[in-house]
Length: 163
Image (cartoon, rainbow, N blue to C red; front, side, top):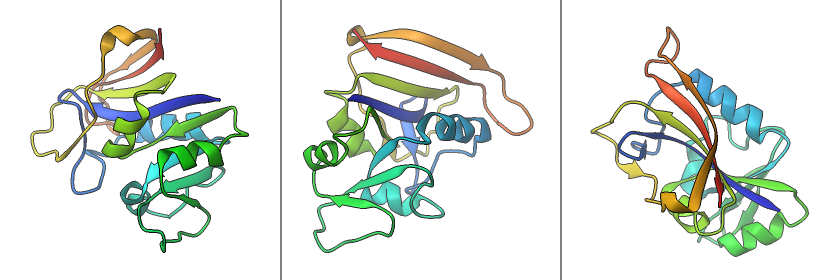
């Protein structure tokens, strides 16, 4: 099984504020949907609670929580990353979609990073992507975009594979 992390992050590794995205970037949301549809997505409880319509459609949603009594509709509830991986064992590819502590745990064994670099520093962010050893990764794809009427900042879609 391939394990991929997908995240939008700012220049200062910021990924969120107040359990929400840093900014509204429709191109990133479309990219996220295109990559993850038809696959399993793994997330923490707070990330799930931040989704505006609950479980993401056309994807198996696995939610990691410490609360053993919690149950969300249209999800597989687990209590550790190990249980999440086991629950998705028949999948060819899974996507880790956040939040910070889930990314931190998955970074040690992820095969691929799908990064949307937002070329802006958000000084009011309160959630950050963990630091990673860039020497362990090789960039395999990069597409750069300028800000436009819908996307307020320059951004890049970057794919990294573990060496």
